Image (cartoon, rainbow, N blue to C red; front, side, top):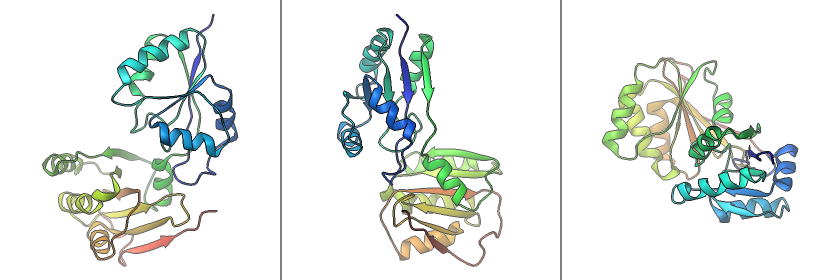
Length: 242
């Protein structure tokens, strides 16, 4: 019996309609779907009227689940891995599973699809021919500032993630450690109907967000080459998703 495949299936980052036909077909035909949180995964499948066997893979059960999943693949089962939003494995559980499958000479198929990284980067208006994905910085202030200090020398575009409720502390530290003059774009609630992009230098973005606080997922894109690309202050560009 040939070993089964693991399909990495991207899911929408906000707008439920941002799912490919191929992704839906894979999710309908595999033997099991692996998700990060059962409630989120179940709601997503239900929205698309897909009935599937669902199991969770997260930091709490990863070691145990990897053994079980490898056995399923060796039995010829076809599996799909999804994240709560966006592309699996990227800033989400799954890396150790990928490594285990590679070590077992198994096959992994990655489907193209939604990604907050690329969506934010191309709409930011900042150079994207080369960039550095910082991901999530350390939560503790001292460690976060130390990490930012190490990024000063990188003359490229930086992409930074953070939880919505830590936006202001993040902007304060990024502005303080990088200098505040860097041009940046704050991409808020990407793909949702109220999606918007705030553009300006780091100091002006911080001042704007302190004066007009908001809630919502965001991606911060920073041109670490000091420039006056958006020199006329902090501007908000609002798009309407359909």
